[in-house]
Picture: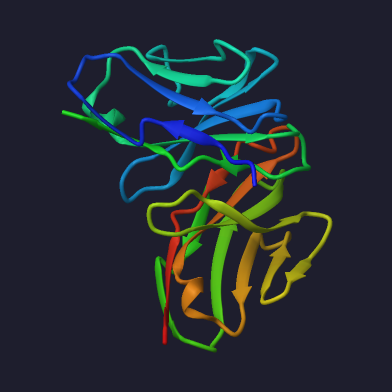
Amino acid sequence: EPEVTQTPSHQVTQMGQEVILRCVPISNHLYFYWYRQILGQKVEFLVSFYNNEISEKSEIFDDQFSVERPDGSNFTLKIRSTKLEDSAMYFCASSDSGVDTGELFFGEGSRLTVL
Amino acid sequence: GENVEQHPSTLSVQEGDSAVIKCTYSDSASNYFPWYKQELGKRPQLIIDIRSNVGEKKDQRIAVTLNKTAKHFSLHITETQPEDSAVYFCAASRAGSARQLTFGSGTQLTVLP
């Protein structure tokens, strides 16, 4: 069964450092997403991406965050200058449809720890 | 924006019993309500979803009900098995942003053998 893969599974970084989280969505999917879950809290939407541009973003997704699809397979989330409060599990997801059909497939997550 | 409340936060049932998890939402424009199961260290996986044009949907031992007037929806698991033990998340989204899901806080379900 095809699946969304994410790397790294866990990253530890110092506050102020840049971090790039990588995702390989399911190959025939066109819509890509990042969600995050701070330990013990809800899963929160960050951003959706379609046709090489951001479709929607939440208030969390400020200027410190950016997304990119650098090639035909990868989808990345960059945090320019990490803060302690960025520590969370970051989930990438993809779907073959951006409207009310189709399933949202999640990756296993990348745990980011900011010290 | 949308706010989704989920109860209970933890639920323990005996194997074979039923489990019910409830969620309420605030945005009357929400029209898509999925449920995800997340086992420890694994990804969230969709187990069932319902759209606002139906009131109930079943898939084997799992059912979801939706009350649009009251803005709440529930997950029902019958004949629970130990492998049902996981964290369950409800979510909601509105038309036009079907993948901007607002999640509930999760329910840790433990099925005791």
